[in-house]
Amino acid sequence: MGPGTRVLDVACGTGVLFEDYLAHGVAEVVGVDISPEMVRIARRKYPQSHVSVLCADVEEISFAQPFDSVVVYNAFPHFTNPARLVAHLAGLLAPGGSLCIAHGMSRQALLRHHESRPSTVSQPLPELQQVTALLHPYFRVSTAVSDEEKFIAAGVRLPG
Image 1 (spheres, rainbow, N blue to C red):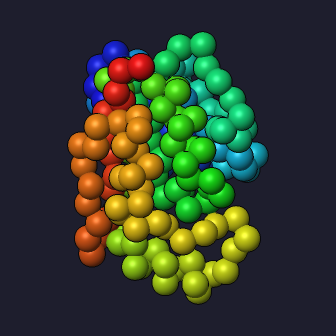
Image 2 (cartoon, rainbow, N blue to C red; image 1 turned 180 degrees about the horizontal axis):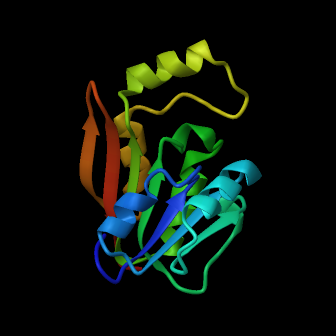
């Protein structure tokens, strides 16, 4: 991610990462979230012409141009079919583009968080090995970290 790149932020919420993308000089940020309220807030916070926020299910939309980076931050457990999501996101990336699935807390902390707030729109975050296995058909895994502070599974899109 850097100058001139296109970034897709999946389940972007209020645009919590948009400031970081803009600081890296990206050419375009596209955020997608299923919550109209989150989309409304993100649009208000980031009115720049090269930032767009869509209210949609990311698994049901396509784009005319591929992205250079796709980020799923603090949202992966909210997708009911992770394999289908990863396959769809791979199709939205240019060859050599990157996918990053990340959480700002450990897998164990996230499990405790979700246990304390039962939800029908969330499932447990899979083990790191399960997530990297989902990436392998489409990506060369570049980062796989699950520690006390974070969870990151990232890869570079393979050709084809």
